[in-house]
Image 1 (spheres, rainbow, N blue to C red):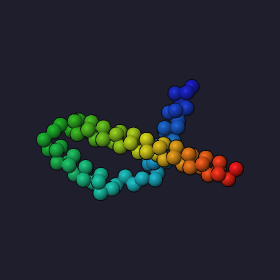
Image 2: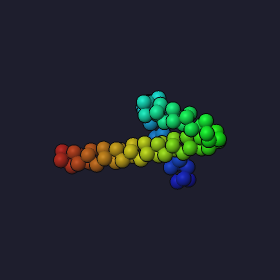
Image 3: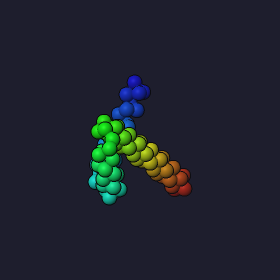
Image 4: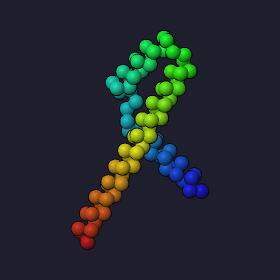
Length: 85
């Protein structure tokens, strides 16, 4: 049950990040251009695998950053609540 809840929370975070972060950035265009260049010399399945790995890594980093930001926000709110009380 805990695993299902964790997967749901991760999905919710990923959905929020997907809605909030633009996908077509100058940084991604550069990566895409490089992948297109190497696709002339490397089999497409390898290009697809590296693309998926890059995306998975970026998603994980964004998710971790979001969680850290939420933890920082909760800490700040707790500090303010203690000062007010």
